[in-house]
Length: 204
Image (cartoon, rainbow, N blue to C red):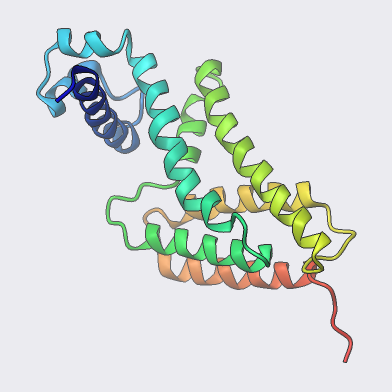
């Protein structure tokens, strides 16, 4: 295997293991030694690839966390004709995935934002950038929905996008250690009602 490809494969393996540790234990409760033990690596091997735990975590945010959020919550609604229908299905699918995941400890992006808020502005900015990409994508889809007649013209697309993001953060947090199925059902029922209020009224 080419040396560069081998290095990339090693870094990816490190990042996947690191994300699991940081997600389950928290960044500040995870030491370099914890990472080395999980990966069966020497300190020299770790520092060959990353200068610090912070740099390692930032690489995880850029390569894995963004990819997770993009594939779960952004990509499924891109190019769909009816954005409200697409967003509804996307949220429901994402929540079902969480509901059936025994290792689910909440929404990875929300968890990290809560942990780093007020403690590391540099990392918080990387996490906020992911939220911004999600928000911009939602706004773009909602605006297209207004143009195509799926959403009332007066609807504030930015306000709706912010509400969707905030409510998703909240329901994922509530689902941890609770009756996830019931919470998902109730959340989706209310989301459908809300989305109906954004759609044009069809007069018979």
